[in-house]
Length: 272
Figure 1 (tube, rainbow, N blue to C red):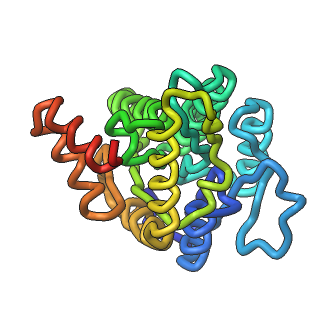
Figure 2: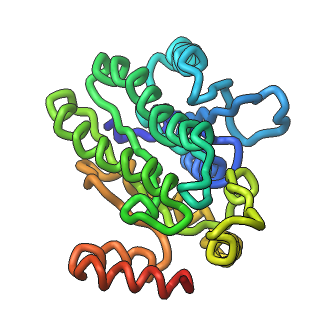
């Protein structure tokens, strides 16, 4: 990667709010050339960095946005796949179309952006892709099973990509955040709490707990600092975790505890 950050071009999907916006603002302050994406950038005024129109579920917008940046800057040095949506609910009661939408946004979307950017990075002889996943992607969480699955799929795909890209000087890594104080809960799909559902009480209680965790989450600036450090790392690791110590420790525990013990720990945490 180039050492002169003022010449580095960064593309951040889902850059109009939350973690994406915080990362973009911070990198802009460090003299990076930053492009964020939004499905409707024309509706956003007085934004701190450039926005291009891109919807990760529509391939034509991915192609158009990347072509626009390449035409203006001649290169894309860092891709930060941040666009994503939340989804909660009993798996049995979650509509199939919502499950597919979550995978289209959280998995196939980032995958298609990567595919579109790689030829340009290969041509320029270097590049870095940072996939924003989730600590939830390391474990199947109750009433967040689909979200966990989408993020876990991206984690594993990145591992494979790293080996496939080793000959091209293109680096790829995952950054898994825990709970951050963003607006993700507002945009999350919630399967309705049905009066007749056998999951009513457990799901309702878990939903309240999840929303409390987000509301009391860390400042997104912590993610911005972590990503800035990764960009300046010569050979990034495959996985980074950013969050509360207990959230990060939960991943280590999953590796060493018997399955049933770990499951009981999660059940206790979610009061199930």
